Amino acid sequence: MRRVSRGLLQSAMARLATPLGEDELGRSAMVFAPHPDDETLGCGGTILQKRRAGAEMQLVFMTDGAASNPGLSSGAEMRMTRHREALEAVELLGLEPARVSWLDFADGELLLWRAEAVMRVSRLLHLHRPEQILLPYAWREHADHVATHSIVYEAIGRVGLAATLLEYPVWSWRHWPTIGRSGSWRKVHAVLAGCRATACGLRFLRELRTSVAVQDVLTRKRAALERHVSQMRRRDGDPRWRTLGDIDQGEFLACLFQDYEYYRRVELRR
Ligand SMILES: [Zn+2]
Image 1: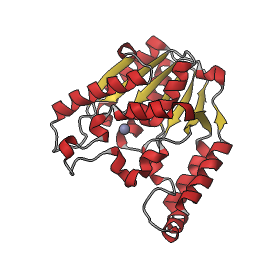
Image 2: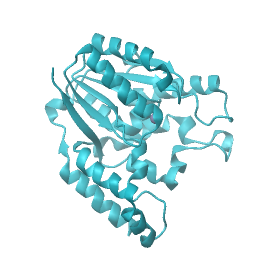
Image 3: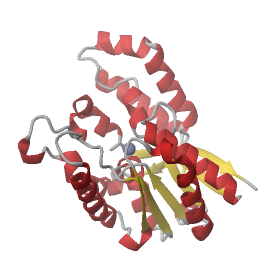
């Protein structure tokens, strides 16, 4: 039943959302990823489709991702690992290293660096003046995702840019009604009836109204995510090492590998 309810909700989202137009796929864009892997998880399929359509693209990593699996790896080692993995992943998404900017703020502490981050993001926006900006959705997200959202908005205002903003969810998918807190329909029903899950479902249906079809590039998106080895495989088989596939018994990743990537769309006109 859980599969059925998920299918119904997913088809409702797909029906309600308006596909990003062919001409829009070809427009220049700047992607803001709070951590290495968010570019693939949140909008990897869209990056592939946009590159296929000939779009000029830039990617900005806000933090260094060094706080992953703390206690099992040193920050310095993890930082180097995540840089290397991210460059391999984005190459599979069609982005050469020259298109990637690293702001390297401390993972988990981006908000502490807000003023400097706004200044550096403003410079990048001023330099490239993208027609579209892909940035994290802010509702019930990781603190660095919320901070990235707010920093990018402030920087856009400072630069006075007119752009289409496409906000992609990552962690808020965990609040999606059918995500695995249960093993039976009764429990799923309880979750659906619960305020948080219901609010999430309704909010996604109401706000994530722009979609990009990514069915034909999902294999490549998967291959790109696999390049983030530190996030996908336990180091030396260590059972304490947490991977993305562990989250909600794999249902979190399943949400990010649907046939569509969804966005909250905001038009900023100047
Ligand atoms: Zn993240």
